[in-house]
Length: 73
Image 1: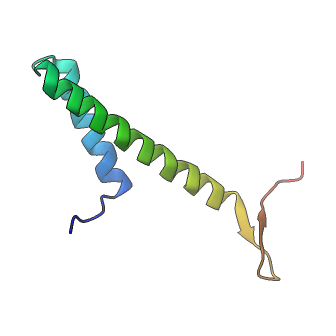
Image 2 (image 1 turned 180 degrees about the vertical axis):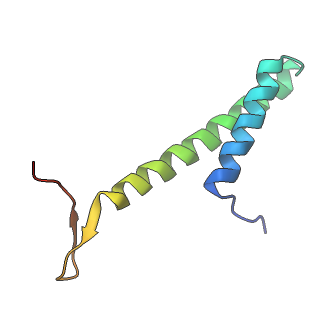
């Protein structure tokens, strides 16, 4: 069973793939596979960031219910 990658591991893998693709020393078939894999990783990272943002924007009220957090200006 494959171990789930952390957000940071996914970002490092994305950076490595982008570097390889920018280098241009990858044949077309490999480039397409790397690009597809990178796009899936980018979506996973985006989803994780969105989830984290939603969690940060909520606070636990005294009554135990999660509610949206807002700052009154």
